[in-house]
Image 1 (spheres, protein in one colour):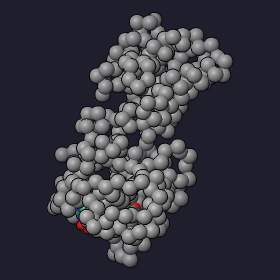
Image 2: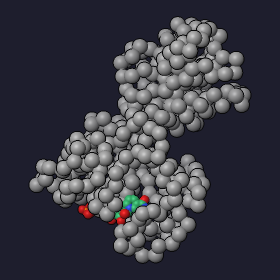
Image 3: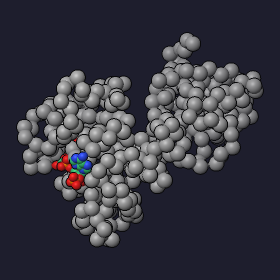
Length: 364
Ligand SMILES: NC(=O)c1ccc[n+]([C@@H]2O[C@H](COP(=O)([O-])OP(=O)(O)OC[C@H]3O[C@@H](n4cnc5c(N)ncnc54)[C@H](OP(=O)(O)O)[C@@H]3O)[C@@H](O)[C@H]2O)c1
């Protein structure tokens, strides 16, 4: 189907809006929507949280609040509208009763058997013109966390690190502030806002004393911090126990009951001295975590790659050389270049002097 430049522009706006909910909507998908009349957006919305208004309803209410008559309008929505009663009424019915004439959908919701084309059928049978596949690839990328959550029944796993040209994430003294420039660091904050949780390994916790909050980008979402203690005692007074609202300590020391600080601290007894990611990613959605962004260090990144469950890699490469230091990735048991772990679906972003490579590890 041929879509016009302005169709793509309106859908891009809907996709951008939808992305704002990426970190907070679990177990729902992130969705954005705009309503257009005479070539102008008259209402827009995005889904913020499970149980709260869906994007389509938000956009309709937005347009109605501004006094618009929605008859004859066109909606651009990033995902097929639902047609079942969940925590909120069906969006397809809301669109029909609002009098909207046409709906452009980026991708169908084939992960939820209650939707999967039925939302489109409901709209069509009410006489609404429906077109699908407008920026379909971007639409599927927006819901990539949701696709893994639904199809594999586990949390989505992203890795992010910043390394020098020679693959170091810290000097031999453990100093890593800052390898990446300001633009790449701002992007990293955006990534935090798009995940339910941000995680670091024990050595990083001690060496960097990170805050693990979303800063320098606007976001309503406050990710949970996940730390991998490996049965070691976590010293009191660490910054993140004050900066975030909630911390999950994986594999805590059995002797530790107090962590200090104002954060709500939960523990998860999954030993990290052997393969543990499969168990963690199945278990942690029960705690409301649908996606984890692991920010290092090398030990924890290596363990995730070894288990082959990484869904996305965000790697910043900075034009500097550190020589001996901490490696981004340790031994993976690869002897031949032909056996290297390769990425596909690759994108490159130029962030100041740095290059960010984004890709999906190929599954063997
Ligand atoms: N530039 C960046 O993007 C960036 C990001 C984060 C951190 N850093 C730097 O990285 C340094 C810390 O990195 P790190 O690698 O020393 O530590 P780390 O990954 O922060 O912590 C190592 C943890 O991984 C555990 N682990 C689990 N499975 C493992 C496996 N298969 N192999 C190795 N470790 C495994 C270790 O447990 P055991 O000890 O029990 O084996 C330990 O708890 C710091 O200097 C920090 O500043 C840089």
